[in-house]
Amino acid sequence: MANSFWDSRAISYTGCAVQVFFVFCLFAAEFSLLTIMSYDRYVAICRPLHYETLLGSRVCVHMAGAAWSCGVLFALLHTANTFSLPLCQGNVVDQFFCEIPQILKLSCSTSYLRELWLLVVNACSVSGCFVFMVVSYVQIFRAVLRIPSQQGRHKAFATCLPHLAVVSLFVTTAIFAYLKPSSISSPPLDLVVAVLYSVVPPAVNPLIYSLRNQELKAALSKVITGCFQKE
Image (tube, rainbow, N blue to C red; front, side, top):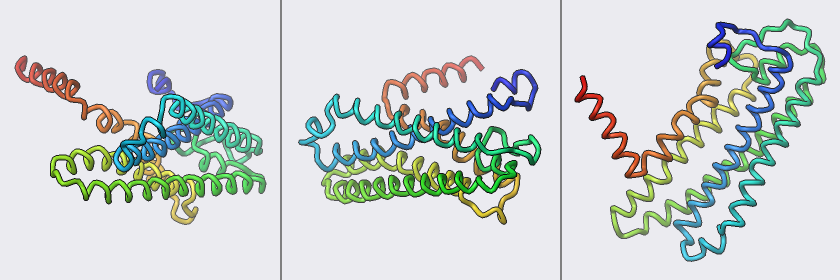
């Protein structure tokens, strides 16, 4: 955003390292929170009578703290490991932000394999969390299909499906971006994939999690109606 205001495409070495840290920290924390949200929905729908016991305020604070701690830990590991590598293949990162695969292309050291293994370990962790989410939603859908009321089933599906769609988009595109073979890599493809996992999920989060609120819907409708009336 700063570069767009200053009409610049340059970033300092330190700025790039800071950007990598915050990108990984926020991505890891967000994915951890999305995993927690799937468990929250499972308990709310499949075990509603145990909700206060399983997900009390203290448990929620601990889970949120664990999510952000994981984000900071993963970010520190990746940032320290990536920027300990010597870079001798120029200083042009072929992406709109400092993305680790693009930085590794500038490395002239075989030690970049350490970072690749770290990315593989992360991908396995992400896949494990995704499997946990899928299992949770399978249990949720089985419970929802047993709801006799069609309105109740619709409400439950409306709550769960958008969350699952965002998680699927985030996971598949992020894993593809970081683990795709170099033989199919190209600047346009890398750009599209990076936008899909870094821009789209945060952009649609307000639509998914806020527009179900009836008061917000009414306020938004009022604003839109007022704009048309002025025209």
